[in-house]
Amino acid sequence: MPEAPISLSRPRRWSLALALAGGVYGLYVVTRAARTDRAPAPPLAPGFAGSAACAGCHPEAAAEHRESNHARALRTTAELERSTLLPEPAWLPDPDLPVAYRIARRGPALGVEAQAGAAGHWQPLSWAFGSGAHGVTPVGEAGPGRFVEAPISFYRQAGWDFTVGFVTQPPAGRRATPTGTPLESRAAFECFHCHATGVRESAAGPVLAGIERGIGCERCHGPGQPHVQAARAGRGAAEIETPGRGSARATVEFCATCHRLEPPPGVRPGDPVVLRFAPVGFLQSRCFRQSGDRFSCLSCHSAHGNVSRDPGFYRRVCAGCHGGPSGGGRCPRPGGDCVGCHMPRAVAQRNVVFTDHRIQIVGAPGR
Image 1 (cartoon, helix red, strand yellow):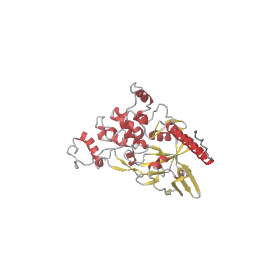
Image 2 (cartoon, one colour):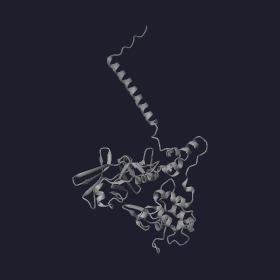
Image 3 (tube, one colour):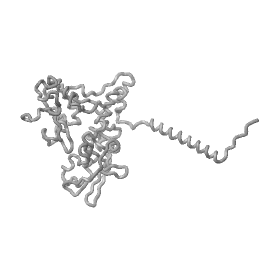
Image 4 (tube, helix red, strand yellow):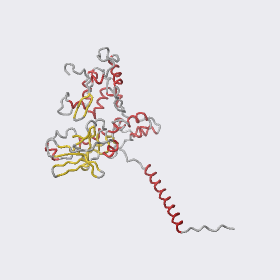
């Protein structure tokens, strides 16, 4: 006897309809998520392949670089907030003007607020310059190609304080632009060019479309798309820049494109601020001058990672030229900290401590 057809009551019909609708919606969500995951990344600057492409053939160097301070040289302010525990902002009074400044939040935007009597001023902040090893300076966008450096920076040693150079400006300038220092087109390009990869220059200011935030592989090795394409096609690796293969001076000069080869205009070589620019002091050192063009930044520092914090590592480097762990028997502290004695750390600028790269006998005549 044939089975009677199954009759669905109204509630069961609704349940089935809802289940089907839910299934269709779930499939839509999964499909949409999959499409989103596969969505192409924004195009990079012409000729650039991106650091991720380099990792396929150079995994160890890429992994070391990913954890480096160079890789975090430029972030968005949102990335900064997610990665750094920032102290609670407080008002900072101007030393010469009836103005107070602080970093504050308005809705989703982090910005700088300036209060001058009853008048309030506000500037959203988009970019965070600096890895945080020493500090971070926020920068805002005041219009197409127009950037403003915040009057307040975050210092690892001191929290929020005035940005280097802000309170040394004439009071009239601070009064005219209380939410920060406008950056000229060339200055803005140089800032982004040394903190990001693939930045292009235009008359209107730096072109940020297609950049890779932070110092990526191609900031030092040059645009790598032909190199990557040739390697993937099995044609052999196309030529690419390798700065460390030149002479020691050429290597130092390459690093100095961002870390400076000469003191800023008007600054004497012995001024404390010069400590911030390691190549300036390094080229003055006897260690470099008497090395036969063999002693460079890469003699002590990894090209891809952070500086070592192990005194023993530097002691072994020094022993390569100075005749043994004790410096040829002349060191009063055999087995001691060469860098601590001959390259002491000191305050270079507001709240910022740097290592003196002049490599000298501290306290010797003429020093």
